[in-house]
Image (cartoon, rainbow, N blue to C red; front, side, top):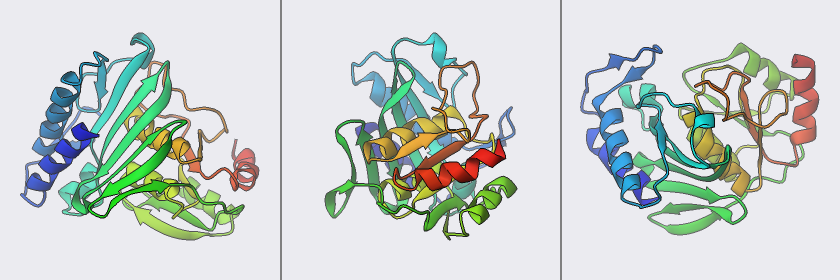
Length: 256
């Protein structure tokens, strides 16, 4: 958690400073803040003596299936478009995969001075200036509130929400912050019905939500695949509470 909070402090310093924007090979934007936060996290994790390899959005691509049993998966600035637009809707992701399964996830919300973390089997928590409180997914058997993308609307996601009865929508920038809404019980569902998300967008959020009692899968109801030789979650991501999953699955099946 210390690594995420150090990176969050860096992003707060760089926020609203009109940084130059570059475009990466995959077409996504990147700034000096992304790279500085990445270096801070790498240095901090290297100092933790875990010895685990680090896969970061801002580093050279490495196939998770080629790593050792444990690997850190990092997005130093999730929501770069929000950051560039001077919106506080961005986050820091640090996740730990063990044999291809997310086991620990940290999602820091820099401008709110909040950090969410979860350890699968041990629970999820939110740490802020008010102290530490546990996080738990909602118990709703139907999707009443859904977290959606603020800047990347998806016709397929809209169709899914329509079939779920048009729940109330919470538009949020960072995928980690959308997952945090589910982990806290403030939303019942977050669905990414595109292939835009990278592995670094999903590892920390999955561990956080599962630790809070939720369920994470792809659009076909199967476990997310972090072991294949790809950067993107090509089959989409569905993050929800457990009780509403039968309703969600009934809607997703006809989309296959």
